[in-house]
Amino acid sequence: MTKSRRTFVLRRGTAAAVACAALLLAGCDGAAGVELSKDWSGVEVFVLSRVDDLTTVVGVDPVARVGKPLAVVPTQSDDDEVRSPQIVRLTTGEWIINIPKKDGRPSALYRIDTGGHSLERVGTVEAERALVPVGAVVAALSTAAASTAGKAEALMYDPATWKSDRAVALPTDPGLAAGGTDDLCTATADGAGSKVTVVPVGAGRAPTTTTIAQLQVQALTCDGDRVAVAGGTATGEGAGEGVRLTTVDGADVVTTAAGRVDRIAATKDALTVVVSSPAGVRVSTLRRSDGKVAGTVDLTGIDGATGLHQVTKGWLLTSGGTAAVVSPETGKAETFTLPGQLLSAD
Image (cartoon, rainbow, N blue to C red; front, side, top):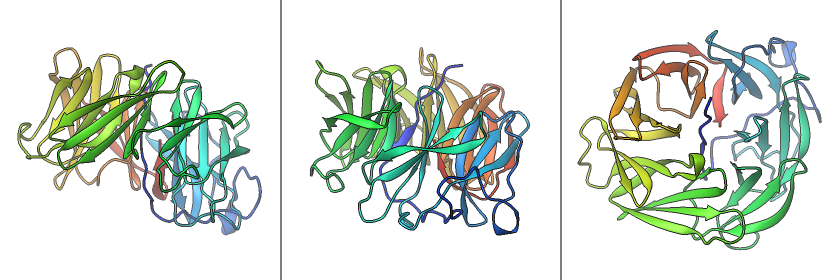
């Protein structure tokens, strides 16, 4: 199955939940905490949710249509209760949890041990950075204001040791970021349009920036180092109630004149886009070959999309306390409830 790269938004989030008071835990349950499931079977996607005021790893089984609380993230007194935690899936398939700390202290990292059914403390990264997997490394992104270097940059970490061996300068503060095979892609919107930059993480190539006029970029993917961006038009014209795919300097550009683009994901042959509006959520798949819409699914009762993952039978959309398995090609969708409220979905 082709895995799409995810988009990471560099911004402050909601308050992080308080978790079990212990250094390393597989979880805490019973009257003092979350009732955890011991059944990890069928789980294809992990998310972080606030369950009973605890930051909890929830495993999602898209076939059985169920979300299971599996582990509670450990807490310490220096946890930052303002910045949200982050969960990411590395290109190796491993899942890493990034817990921010107060007062500029390095963020704590935990690995989900799917074999041992627990969480393992694996290291730290510099404070106030978002993790973006890029091939065999993990980029830890920072804006100029948050960086100790005083400029926007990405520290490159080896996920085997969580040691950084180099910093890669970014041309501007990234509003959105996504990882490809060899490149880091960033995007920033302004009043006139959007700038999309491809930043090589290795030596020998310089960053390249493409300006896309009239696009207010809202989502980004960099799968296979082919950039795809999506958003609204500055004029609000051109796409009607649907979505339209064009190409600008080798980048796929999806536009909508109505609603907000929450997510875009890519496979080799298609792009899947989630557009939210007051009427609900529309998930559309567009063929990269000719730009035509291959199918759509409309969902009501869901307020946007925090996560979008390709799973065994379609796409898994997560939002708040709800998940949906959708197949735009068949027009089918099935929603189900997740435990708690979503904090982070890769």
